[in-house]
Amino acid sequence: MIIAEVRTYDWCNRGDLMDLNEKLQILTDAAKYDVSCSSSGSTRKNNRSGLGNGAISGICHSWSEDGRCISLLKILLTNHCIYNCEYCINRRSNDIKRASFTPREVADLTLNFYKRNYIEGLFLSSGVIRNPDYTMALLIETARILRTEMNFNGYIHMKAIPGAAKELVDRIGLLVDRLSINIELPTEQSLALLAPQKNFQAILDPMAEVKEGLLANREDRKKFRSAPKFVPAGQTTQMIIGASRETDRDILYRSQSLYKDFSLKRVYYSAFVPVVASQYTQGIDRAPLAREHRIYQADWLLRFYGFKAEDLLDDKNKNLDLSIDPKANWALHHLDQFPIEINTAPYADLLKIPGIGKVSAHKIIKARKFRRLSFEDLKAMRISTKKAGYFITVGGKYRGGHFSPDQLRTILSDGWGAHPPEQLSLWGPL
Image (cartoon, rainbow, N blue to C red; front, side, top):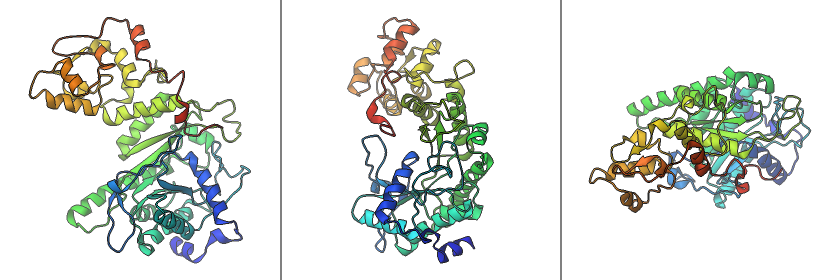
C-alpha cells in the first residue's frame, strides 16, 4: 500500500523547483556526518543485460584527504526530518536550507555518475519524513528503479529506518548489498536525553530482523541456488561518541553486545561535532580524533584478536589511554603473561603480543613447522620486532632490555594523544 502510494504521488516535487545541482550540493554535504560508508563484502557480478559490478574486485576505493571513502555516491534522499535530535544538523528545528530528491532523480544521478566512472555504487540515507514506513518506501522505490528498470548491478548501501515495518525491511534487503541501522548513541539513557522521539528498541528490532533474514536466506540458498540474496554484504551501524559524556567502556560494551547479538559486520564510530547548539550538549567540546582512533583500534581487537571489552577496560579504567594503543596498554597491565616464546606459543597468544598482527602470526605458525625460528628468521619474514621485542623470546633469547612499566609506556607511546595527525580528521577544519 505504501509502495503504491510512493509510486503514484511524487511528494518531492510539491513546489520543489530547486536546481538539481543545488540539491546535490546540499544533500551530499548533509550526508558527510554519516561515516558508516563501506563498499566491501558483496559478490554481485555483472551480466550481459545489466550495468555495473558489485563484486569485491569491482569496488574501487578512493579516499579523500580527510580519510573518507568517496568511491560511492554518498547522499541523503532528503534532509527534511520529523525528528529533533539534539546532535543532528538536520534536526527539525535547525534553520538550514532543505532539499529533497525524488527516487528517480537519485537513480538517474547514480547511473550517470557510474557511466562517467565517478563512482562504483550508491550510499543512500535520509531524514525521516511523514513516518518511518513512508521514508523506507521511498528508499525501496529508489533501489527498485535501479535494480529492475535500469538493470544496475553495482553496489548499493542504504539505511534502514528504525520503526519501519518488518515487511519493508525484508523488501529492501532483497534489493541492496548492505543495510545500516544506526544505533546513534551507546546507552538507552543518552538516546532518551538527546533523541527523545526515537526508541532504543525500535533500533534493535530491525537489526534482529536483518539477522533473522540472513539466517533464513542462508538456508534457502542451500535448498535453491536461484534464491535471491538478502543483504549479501551484511549490516552495519554507527555510534556517535562524546555527545553524552559516556565512557569508552560504555561504548565498547555496547559494540560487543551488538556484534554478539546481531552479527554486525562492523560498528562505525563518529566523533561528536557540536554542529548545532543544544542545552544538553552545552559545554561538550568536539570529541578528539585520538579518542575515535583508539576506539577503532579496540574494536579491531574485539572483532579479530580474541579480546573482550572487559579485558581492555574495567571499573577502575573506564577510558582508553590516548597515548598508547589498546593492545600495548593491555600488555603493560599483564606483564606477568610475558615474555612469550615465539616457537611454542599458540596462535591466540601470538595475537596478544604488541606489534604482532594476524598476518605475522600466521607466518610464524607456518614457518615454525619446518624449523625452530630465530630473530634473523623473523627479520627475513619481514616481521618487525621493534615493538614486539619487549614482549617475546625467540629460541629462549630475550632482546628487549630491562625497563620499568613506566619506561615501557613512554617507549611504546605513539604520540597520538598529544599530536593526532591533522590529515586524518574526518571533518576537516570547523
